[in-house]
Image (spheres, rainbow, N blue to C red):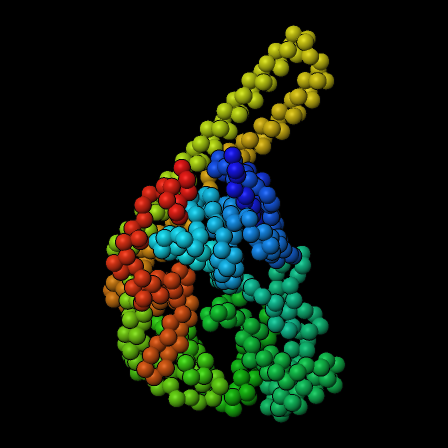
Length: 496
């Protein structure tokens, strides 16, 4: 019987390996799939990424292989996020004109796949590309939690250092003296930044740039607070500059002693940029009642007019309308997701039963060998060697059993369901919420947006960008082939 040629690609990060997601489990799954579907594996490509070497050398080699070997047109891969990691990867794979089997997701994708299959695949690609962004968001969350605890999450300013033993911010014995001298001299009002720079060279024997000195003199870190991502936090670090000395310096810097106003709570501040100059849009509260938004004029004055809060909200409302999914499309996707989840549970149950049978067989072998030892039919040394071997096998199989639950697959399905629900309800939730709730909802849907005198230009987060694009072109309107059937032998579904 003629066997179709195929290759497989597997990828895992060093971090994932430590968490129990081994490359061996991927390889075993792909090899079993190839055997079951009469496919001949002619090459394998494996990437193990680490923080030190984040590139994918073997992915590039796989692409070269497909370009040179026209007889092999089938690629096996565990699931979407094992194959794609950036915006370019899906295009690279599509240009190869090959048939990609996503084994765990029970899906085959090629140029001949139905548009409904391609749409589901596009969403999975968007979720895979969003993985790295999610990691970044988790890091930011961790940093914000540090800030709330009073711990500065980055390198501390000049005059401080991080104690390597305790990982706490402490006063630098030499640099703190320089900062102290700078504050005391500038507070007299007898120095400009330029003349202070020269005086520090003479009195403290240090050469600091004018921008560095100005930043030091304005930095509220020295009196116990710090800013992180436009929020102000109370720090727990030790202080060596008094509040009244800091206030005197600010008076000299500004030329008057009027205290600077603190940030007010403004709902849509930080969400939009000016379309004309690229600066952020900020908000101001007038008469403690009315909020107006304007450009921060970071690059000089520009032609953007001021907006009332209601105007910004109305423009964002239009943005929310653009991501509403038709009920039929949402139901189609939900059906596909449920089928995928059912298949995942079925695969896990099958593998769990297989491992339990192997554990029972292993225990029976141990019992029989122990009986032979008791009867004197095998030596004690041979028994001990067998016991070590079986103990290792037992540990391996129990580890495989405990890691069977594919938490990542379950989490991806939950995230996708949340996205679909949000796409269906975003507009109604937006209308029902106050300005602050509308701003929170906007941040979940948009990664950025800009505004000019007439229009708001949104940049949707993934996969809302895909949904908005499909909705705009009405690609699912009246399309019979978007009504996905259960997986079967037709193109776009794995063989049974």
